[in-house]
Image 1 (cartoon, rainbow, N blue to C red):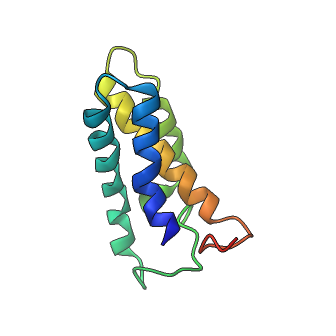
Image 2: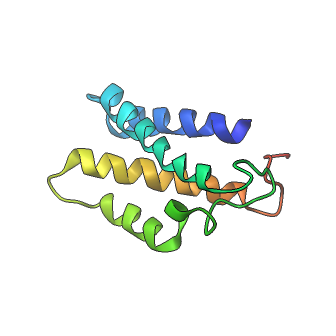
Image 3: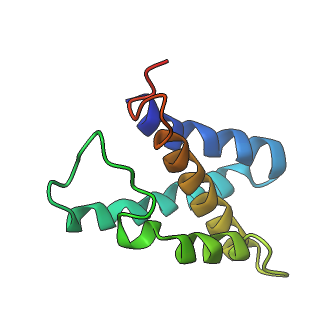
Length: 107
């Protein structure tokens, strides 16, 4: 549950810290990147608490993650950069969830 909450909490901190003038719009764009999890619907079962999303789901593959990181650096395209930041943040949170200390953030 904490993992899902962090997908909504972390972007608000990023938006507030780095996009102060337009934090609401930045936050909404980064939250929209949660749609990347629609690829979970292709898995059976759709939700498995012991499964690592990174490398399993189609939009969570390393080559897509590289693309998401590249989007963060698109010059003169602030909305595309926000999408990249949101997707990269999302993948980072998913990666943390894959670590040996527990997929349910049980620390």
